[in-house]
Image (cartoon, rainbow, N blue to C red; front, side, top):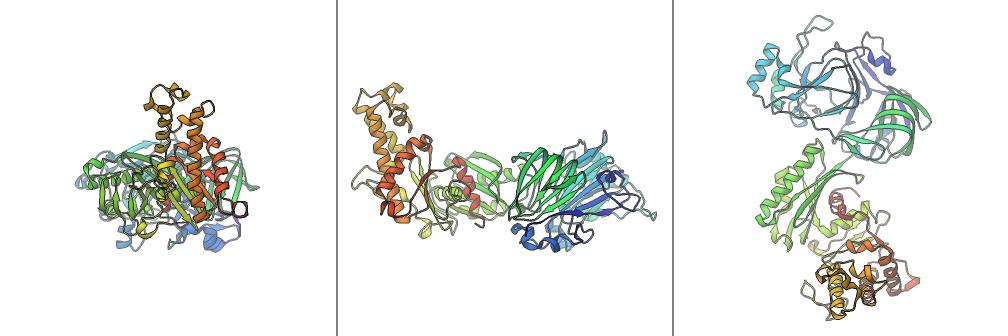
Length: 618
């Protein structure tokens, strides 16, 4: 059932709090409102729906979303904080430490600055690498903040705070805090102030020393434009966006997660309901499209799953951090360095994984796994490269090697299969259950999707459609056979035939390019309208390509065949005549189901997205 409900928070009157949150519409009988727990299922402070129910009672498992099914509890907590005085210097433990020593989860959090007085700021991490003994002395003599970075803050800034990072909110800052659902804090220094009972609040210095990161800290802001919203924080426990509307914006609540919305500035409407500063709404998973109208600044949260996709090439290793909707959050590449052997390549893959995580402020536990597309014959079940000519490898246990280096589970598949999976899940094959990708490059790669699953064959050695023979005794193929589909349909074959035509016909207009070594995969297409020899090359290429695709269609009868590679840049000049060949050659002609030929959409991102999809529940 679709639901959009307004929440009422729990108010906290801690000693450092003020009354600025009353300007956000918050009401309390207490003298101070230090915090309001806006979206909370924590027993120390529940937020309730307008029906008087807590979030779990109101929405149930389906309404919260399938991405929450692996959590033992509601994973996120959203607060508004008004610091009329400095908060204590504190640190939060990691899950690993907290579960072992406290029987509780730890806490990672982020702060979005909703407002700040002139000169107000936060303490965050150490200025430089610090010895534990020096820190203990500073706690004893009250100079602990001298060791910490002080950052003057401005409205609109975001700071991500991993567990283990020493921190404190300074006075005069209003914050929207998005955090892991935990109330576990180790207080280190509290300025010797006393609570309402005249007692100093307890400190937890010994525990804090066990979990603190004593290395120098530098803030790293995540700021990713995602169309109508800006990603500012991500972890397995929460994903947070900043949204600024000026008119009407449309968003979508998919079945993966609910959406929580807290308004920090302005006023407007959400699905026809008024929303203004301080209001928090929650929308059920699967609600679908919804509209926000007006001039408002919002924090929007949800729970997404994250994966790392690695596309291993002979020259570069490309990688990306991908969410379960197919958004690449961050991406990068590094040299492969195959000349130094498999161990170096695995070191480089691990280095890239760690770099991606660092850029996104993530830890290994925040991702579901690492998926990898690897060239060659791959045993995906055992995670072994049986043979790869591109990498000059035999029997390399790459999945095990990368997992040992990163602490993250790894799944691999052949790179062409991975690209096919990427197109199937996130690209041109998204609306089809059965589809096949043919990549026209140096060779002819292929990937087969049946029932939205990869078909890899015995020991993952199948799906080599480029090596079916279409001309008995024909052109020599690099695999050792003659007449393979690859020997006629690859970009290499197209270039070969273009050169042959030019050498055989010195009057060809294709010589206008000057040097035969300048021939590329598009040369014949560029001249086919004004040069008979170029047209012959193109017509022959399309006939042979159509023959291979018709064979594939006759065997698998997919919903569609997707074509990738630089040759596809010809668009309709390639696809329209090619479709006529396939329609002519396909078994049963018009009597059977059609097999459209479509151009792949993802380009060189197919490998990254497909690798990530190896780990997804599709």
